[in-house]
Length: 194
Image (cartoon, rainbow, N blue to C red; front, side, top):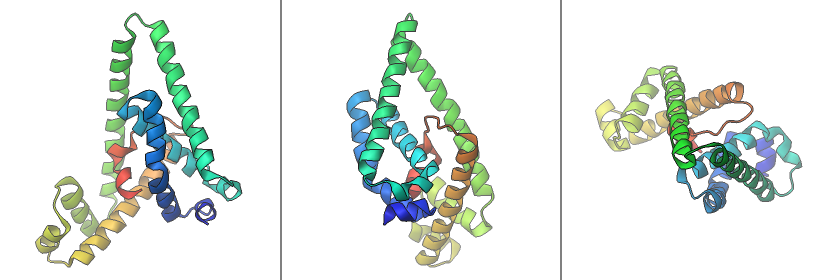
């Protein structure tokens, strides 16, 4: 049922699948990579592949086996790359660490720009609610009092803002990051809506 909905671009189905399998994928990735950042990137990359290939999932019989196969492929890819860097480098650990850190910083900067663009496109009330909750760390009730709205209205505005941001980010990633790169989408608040 969820896979059929996913193949019809249902984002709720995508979120449910993400929430159901993200920890399992992370566990497999971390078991082999022993790296939190790489494991998070693998989770994001697996689900980027799922989103990009969503139209094919009505034919998939065992989704868990499918995503675990993708996960193992990405883990092996990471390990092969790490081994290659170790062989080609005078100081493999230092080189890998500095290159990896530089890549993460570059991605963080790019994703922050994408997020800022998405927030700027929001209606004014959604912008206010998003900024107060997500960037200033206020609670829903605090924002409701501040803006003289009900907590349910704040919840609605935040949900609409997150949906718009998600669509903007996914459209951007679909067009600019295919084939898939290792994504630090967590910094883009995608974990907040998945």
